[in-house]
Image 1 (cartoon, rainbow, N blue to C red):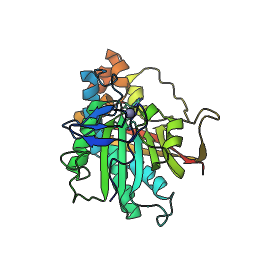
Image 2 (cartoon, rainbow, N blue to C red):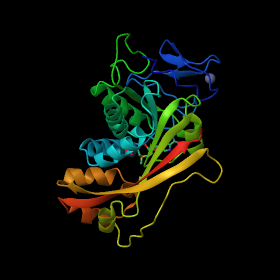
Image 3 (cartoon, rainbow, N blue to C red):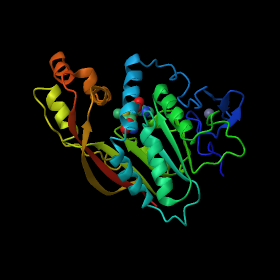
Image 4 (tube, rainbow, N blue to C red):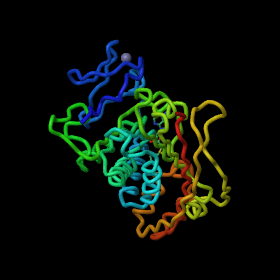
Length: 308
Ligand SMILES: C[S@@+](CC[C@H](N)C(=O)[O-])C[C@H]1O[C@@H](n2cnc3c(N)ncnc32)[C@H](O)[C@@H]1O
Ligand SMILES: [Zn+2]
């Protein structure tokens, strides 16, 4: 099995990274701490301490609670199917490597990787990157609990450790991904800013990028409870003209009901949305009065292919 760390590169100079005591280090001497949680912090030095608020931690917890109940599973199924179709299994060397750009707390990352591994019946390595250390912590905790990451973390896989899926979420900037050129068979962006140029750079020729964004009607029922005046907008993520070496393959809309049957489930959904910070008291009170709610999840899945 190849080394899980092989595709990682120093975010400052692009050099490869070697294991050293308590850190990973490039030849130019840039070093990145290994955290107890099992990740290596690949945010460039100086950007590591942009203190994240307690709010952010709560949002991550809410997102984990919501996603782990499987409410968004149809999205993971569709994204994994789109990536699994792409390559001739015989021609792609193992493991199939994927990057999740803006992975959050890693639930989609781990689900998509395990569906992909099952569909292809081949090993999958997935590396998620997020600016949030809390996200990386939660993602690595989940990966460990699933057996996708050794208990001592990414930098210390025991010699005999094998797993059909290897996964980790690392603190990193998706607009300067700490990954080698043409090192990934697939890239994912779910409900996050899309670093088009970086996706094109890290993908092998013919590798696919799957982008999931909120559709026009996404969580419409929730928005109508929170706000008196709801304006629906169409948004189709696409690379700025001429800036990316990505070919558009197509897009589809996934629409499905999500039935929330307790105040806790409603709160978990609310807290993972941007409305949680923005909405006024009247909207909050209307929502707090409910103990069940069915909302429409509408996600747009678009697919792109790196030029050969
Ligand atoms: C709405 S969340 C989606 C998380 C996850 N993909 C999901 O669907 O559950 C967007 C994520 O993008 C991350 N993000 C935004 N800008 C980033 C950047 N420049 N580098 C890394 N992560 C970034 C945020 O920290 C946040 O976790
Ligand atoms: Zn370096």
